[in-house]
Length: 308
Image (cartoon, rainbow, N blue to C red; front, side, top):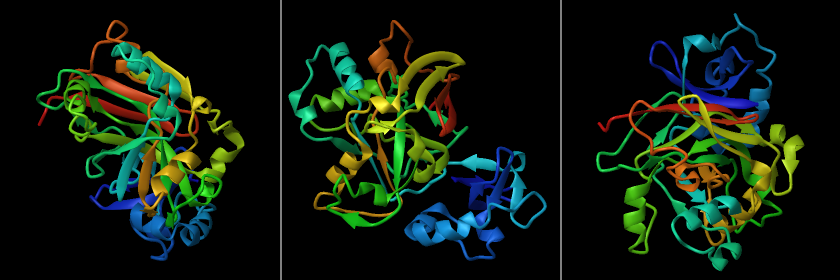
């Protein structure tokens, strides 16, 4: 199943499930109020709510709560996550990005999956405009997969972690590289170089739909990025070094994870300008259109605009 959040023509925002490529179901309306109207509340009781939501799939256009996709506007599928941790789980990206900065591979990276917290209140969705920060000259995209937590847990082992995953979506961890470089020289961060925007979407796909594609510690899904229609990044999630299970184990050690938290995979190999180098493509500028495409997860498209 593919879950979305959308805005109707009257301005009402609701969570929904895609019926097909052209129609969406307002779950709250179609289920006569038995399902929540927003995705965060849905996730808080995800196991029970999933059972009810599956019962809506026989609906068709003309039934209560079914809308043509071209009459609504998709926004971030989880607009208000409880938190956002971003990991650093693809070895190729780590190695290449460090080489480009004149650094050797750090051996501690192989000991534990590391992460940082970013701004969970700056979530953007498909087609949203991304404001380039005023002081930023080196704006970058990052091609990632996000994992959505659907069950509360603490001290979760990697082997148990699958029980706590609701689903997956595309994530673009926008980065002001010049701000990031400055702050990390102090030994903290990234923080200000990341906190202005993170895009997710266009939908969250449930974990059961991804299971047939499992390969190694990830999934055999192609990951691509285009700028202004020009292919730039290409990778595959099966190349990930740390599984989402291992990331969940690390994140939940001594800490409770809650439904509605987001964990990012980190950038796939070749998945950003920092790694590719500016000789391959310049930093992003207002007017640029960035598209991230991942098998099964769709296309996440955003345009860059001047700072507001």
